[in-house]
Length: 414
Image 1 (cartoon, rainbow, N blue to C red):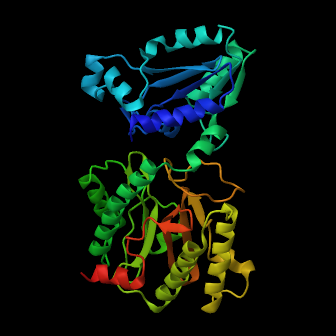
Image 2: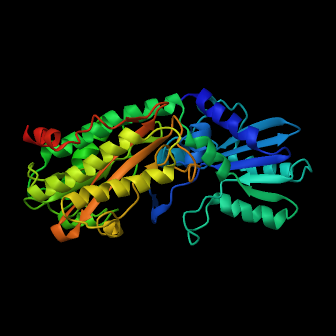
Image 3: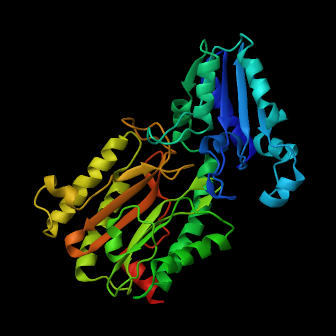
């Protein structure tokens, strides 16, 4: 992504901030894995959206006073000994080139600088990224800083900036869509490798190795999310992550995977029999899911409500399942469809957007995710594709990933 893209994102954000306010974003830090090791660092998605910088320990600060915006990025100072052990730190010229922000300071000055701003009398409100998935999650830097403000500056209002960012991230810029397309070429290759290698007796971790090889070979060092690859009865755990199962002859392989490019994610699911040939029951169920997905892509268009995508998918799939005798009424759909039929995708694989109860619009990207789980038949899988809303309808960004029974069997026969 270019500096112009990130600068435009910040300008739209600043336009929605109230005058007499400051906003602070933290890039985040990697959690500790063991005594002296850390997990791979994953940049805060909103910080990345606004700056394009993928380093830990950085802070973005902006003030809006009298209509004028001043912005700074705080970076870690050079430290030869630490950089020998944990890698180089970003240089000021790199940060300027990537973000378009020219005021670069060292993070050791952040505390004094921000307290000077908050004591100036010109700021009445502080915006922070206060996202929490569940109430019992540990407090991140933004939440800890919010507590500092509330304790030390009770006369200031602390406001969550996330609702504004959700609106900004809902519609994708052309460069974001281009990045998703580039990621899809990598995702496709990874899925093809798994299909071609598939055979009875193959372990789930071997499937994962095939997918990871394709990503690494393309320079994608981390997938868009924790890959879900399972066989047989493990398919009935929706977010399975063990990889230790072994495919028995006739087992379905479920994969829910994606590459990322420039921070933009893919999320694609396919299901196939490990032996390369769908049984009668597998074929019937897969056709139900595929027909539902195809129908959804034929009707999705601007103006349709996101809520209706899921409802329509469930009702259409119900009719498909009724035709093959698995259901008699819609009241039973929960037996076979365990999750929603759509979710947004972008900088997060389950993207943080403002779409609930609102009409679909061009340049939205979301997944059409049709999952069928027939425990009584031992068959579970998903057909999940990435949908770009166009001015007149929808484009399947993952259409190049084999999805029909004929195409999948042909790939596996090679």
